[in-house]
Length: 558
Picture (cartoon, one colour):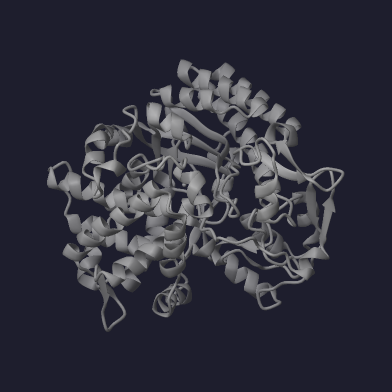
């Protein structure tokens, strides 16, 4: 779940306007060829930016799969490539023309990593001359559309998860459903899923694939979401379609296309099975008045661990997802709960290549032993579980939290999930359900803040981490030593967890947009001291995130 958000419309600069062709009626915007480099005007700057990413091979043990399951994988990955192309359009515009305009191979490679000319790990700063700032609404809305114009438009479906806003022949706003904008690609994607379904040996998975194929053509994803929650025994899984809304930083309404192809780790999944049953009881322990915890989490919530073998689209842009909590549909969540998928191989890569080197630099020596993979896995897992806790709809009848908090919804929700994940760990530890030293979770969590805050201002997770870092610092949950290392204070860490949990839950329950905006503006910033720590990590050559070698060849499939 990803994207920090601001409460104003990006004003497109003159140099950007000169490079935009606004196709009235079609609603496309294309950036004209741009050759210059922004990062020092030299290739070495781009090379350094690419070096922010460690390269990871996405593999798994194929011997556990049947012949038909192995035949399914290339079909699902091909469908994922279609999602990738759709996301390019949503994030930027026309992919082929833009990439062809970039003459330097390294610049072209970096643009592919970022799905456009803006560096996602540096607050979407442009790295190609002349493109200007990234529109807050990406390519979901006309670049020249104002918020006032959008809000005044009497258009059915304008705030739908599955529509673009475009201009008609008279220059007025119109709604274009995804099924129309992507008609041919979705027909091909549906065909691929149906081919995969014909090979599926698990009845539930076959039904899900067929319903998801139908959804590509209708924009009605709820039946396939429900079918996805009904699956329990399938070894192969695929998360595919328009799902997360972080790319839309103007309103947070529009979902972006993505794809994960997954292989279940049944041994690790068995370890996680017991935790789902605690959700309803944990809801009652939330540190807020009863009116903020009246919603009951779905009882069909399921936890599983997977090897991810293919990323495409939104989840592959910038910082990479290592856990999934879906579906996002509030009605589905209240009716049946969610599934939490831990991407164990991707998680292990980030732990080994990023988190341990960060801990060596920034955590006091006697607490480094508390930075463990099991704690990292658990913190991430309980983050995803905690998305199901709290509240989805405001307590004052103003609508869903997502709708009322608008562009701040993502950052507040990610912050809530992180902090309620710690609340769950505290509760389960007190009950004896978690036997590990509590300091493992806290110190690993602290190191994780430094990892995630490096994602910068273009990520909801990064913004949420900035809020938490500043809140915890002010509460004395940790302190910086004279040698530049940080020490966690366990008692104050627990208190800060309770206080921030209460604040975020009440902002959501009240639908307090002004309060959320104030919190983001005051706490969602990187101060000079924290920036110096992040600069040190860069100087030491510690990667910020990962990129993948993936596909049939990497897996050894013919």
